Length: 334
Length: 68
Image (cartoon, rainbow over all chains, first blue to last red):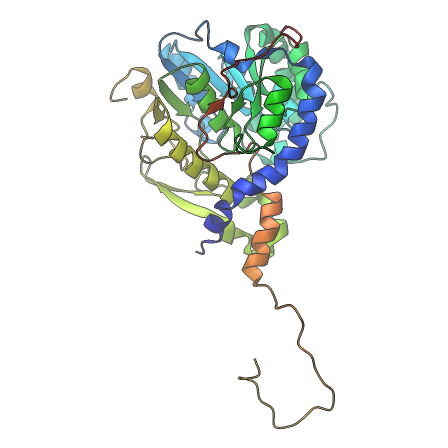
């Protein structure tokens, strides 16, 4: 095994800025007339009971470990914060999150997580058929989309969305039309102490807080949970940052890109990690490995205790112990 | 290269070495990868979780439309 994947991962911070800054600034400008409440207004009144939040990601463990079915069975009453990609799975399980977090500026894909009103035929983009973030879309994407449209329309007025100013205008449209309440924030793009900072410029333009998102929507949801909602005890489900043993490389997030770039060598970019909780070897790609490293570093600085109840994946280390979901909810050893 | 490859003949034509050295294959792969891989949101090291401005001015809502 080579360390190609790890070396790439170490350089993804700058690459992410190059990838999202321009489109993010453009979307912020487009969305500007529609911006209403700030993310900070979510702090009061408290969401959910007590000091606990569960952050729901869209990783494969969510289905593999039946995390949502088990969460519903516990009678958990704390805050539920879900990433956009997990919204469909939550609603199908009867869990209406207090808050959805969305950040990715992709112009077409992200609206699908809310039900895409414009989808009338299978998309040429195989992203949703290939992914395992929500297997319902892989089975029959049109039927899954129709169901999601109905669910989001029904429960939209009961949900809040922490929406980044970089979000696609299509996502803003969909959330508004579903009656969801939007709370806005700027992604922290760069060092706001620098005079030419994009973060500083956006804040000056719209007055919104800048949130350090850690590379992905799952980490951003965790940051919102403690830095905005004030929760001090946070459980994670579905935050794998990796792929289960036996997953085909063709069904991984960055497969087309890695295949295009590395040809037959593409497997060298994957990183294999032993998960001590399950005694399984998972694998991950450079981007997810970067998310993992960043999360572990941020967790050490956070004013909260974080427990990984994902029961899979590669996110574990100092400050992020792995515990069973029920143990976290019942506060047994967690 | 000339230190290792020596022929027992001489060429009439003068062969010039390319001006740029050939980039290591792995480095080339990584440059290409960085252009297409990455996250959906940045991470900014050592800048905290939330920045609300220099003067604790909080959210400015006066010039925004009300939330629905």
